[in-house]
Structure formats: structure tokens, C-alpha cells
Image (cartoon, rainbow, N blue to C red; front, side, top):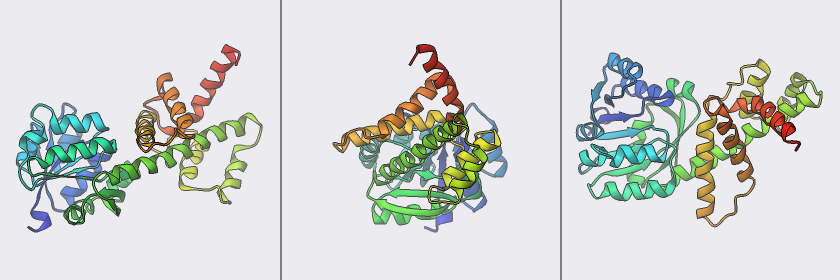
Length: 303
């Protein structure tokens, strides 16, 4: 079967999903999207030629491939196995590509359940931001057999610039959690450092120039510290709530590998605190602003 002949179903038209889905349509794939009460993204895709399915079961029954891009493990499990879920509409040969950030143990269990219907699950979580999703320049890390990777790659190429086959099912989600730990760890440290820079009387603009010229520079530093200097703190478009969720998955993965929490426990705690103090829907650069809240709270307690 030619790749463009495959019917694609898509679940999850959020910040990342809309750009991914638009690229699939624009590059010639036949696309159906799962209906949702929030209509803007649905209507935008329908205007490009996508069809709308009223249930995940109906979506799967009429697709050769289903792409998931939802928040995390609970949402993945619900759309797969809930009432009128994908499993109910699955059939022999259906390929399910989970681009969500999910827990690897759940991914393995999900793959096993789908195999009972002759369907295959591949984990292909993504890196980069909604901007790159719209541009078709995401990075994907894939967990699949060699054969299933070859089936999956042409779909991912519609919205990805770089595609890495990390190993068997589950390997993609493991790599994603490791990658997000590095990214979110840097973001937290940069926000805290820039806050300390200001508090200690070091000009932040000069400090930014210094780091930018040395080995401490990175893409994350440019996005987070640069936007702190600009005053909007939104250079890395990733919500604190989602960072906290991903770091909790990372922590459980470490426990499953018989590792102690490491310094990741402190990083995770900082994101949890910020989320619980009302910063959850703000992007991770707003940890800089949260440092003011945290410092003021500590002074009130007399810490």
C-alpha cells in the first residue's frame, strides 16, 4: 500500500497536535480527527479537508493508522480502552502511534492489549515546540520493531525533521523522559540562577552575554534566559504543569530501574511547588517569577 493511501486518524488537537495534523493533510494524507467540544482546531482541520469522527472507536474502525497526541498516560489509556475507545474499533493490521509523553510500563501494557486485536502500538514521543510542530520540524524518538519502524517512519516524516529509532516498544518513551529531565532540569537551574543573578546585583544582561560566549551556553539557556531578559519568560513554550507531570514519570522510571531519586527529586519538587502555587499553566521560564513567591513565603515563615 502506498503511504499516502493509508487513512490516518488523529486524536489530540492541542498546541502540538494541530500543527502535526495540518502537516499530514497538507502533505497528502487522508485524515480524520476525533471530535471535541472545543471546536476551533477541529473546524480549522476540516477546512483543510479533514473529516471528523464522533468516537475513538469509529476513528479506529475507518483508519489504517491512528496517531495519539494527548497529555499523558491517563488520557492515552482512556482513549485506547475507554467506552467506544480505539480498542473497540481496532482490527488486524491497525497501527497506533503514541506521540504523547507516557509512562513506559503503561506503554508496554497498552501494546500487549492491542496485540490481542492484531493491532500494533509504536511509541513515538516528540521534542521541540508547537512552532516546530507547525513547521514540520519536530524530533521523534521511536520504540518499535524494525518492521514497525519502517511502517511508522513515513507518517512521522510529515511533521518531523529528525526521527530516531531508540529500540523496541517502550524505548521511545524512556528516551523522552530522559530527554525531558535534561531539558526541564536546565530550565529550572537557569531560572533560579537568573533570579540569584538579579538578587546578587550582577547585571543580568552582562551575565547573559558571558554565558552565551562560553561552554555553559545551550539552546535551553537562550530560550529561557533570553526570554527572562525580555520580560515575557515564555521562550520555552512548555507548561510548568506538564513539566511536573513528565518529571513524576521520570522519577517512577528511576524507581523501576532500582535507582534512587538523585537530584531529579529536587528538580521535580520545584516544579510541583510552582504548580501548586498557581503557576501550572505558565511556561517553565516563569519559575523565575516563582522564585520571588518562594523567597517571600520563606521569609514569612522565618526560614
